[in-house]
Image (cartoon, rainbow, N blue to C red):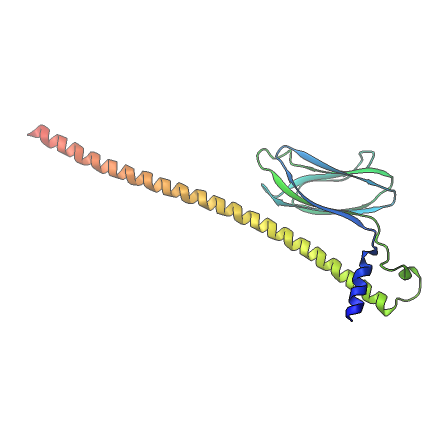
Length: 208
């Protein structure tokens, strides 16, 4: 069983799907684009999510080599997009934070392209799969689900951590403000009481 698992793991690298996962900062009033040259009839998939900044939203658009819009969405927190190319050329994926005046964003992008070939060359035949081939396919699919789940949990953890840090910052500032206000009120009350006694002492001296 151990030999079967190791064999399957070694054979899982036969896929030709290419992908890029990046996390980048997008300043306010700025736009950032990514370029990829693709052949005709190649499927590509895009997943993105705003991890931190403002209302966790960003503008995103995708264009083909002739600058025709394939995808154009405004103020999205996260989304997915799939497309099969109809021509060879450079495809562009852009993220815009131009609507924001003072908050920068941190964006996660997953760009995948290519068709997934069979794990083994013997799987290209029309006959039924052997037990080894079926086990390899099952392990491969499970590993894909595990990888996607880990990515999703990492994004949620990063987003929740950012929200917690912002909440801590606001609570800290609020506490400092309350402390300063308490001291100001206390000093004001002391000064006010002192002025009452000063006025009473002055009036007694004048009467005498």
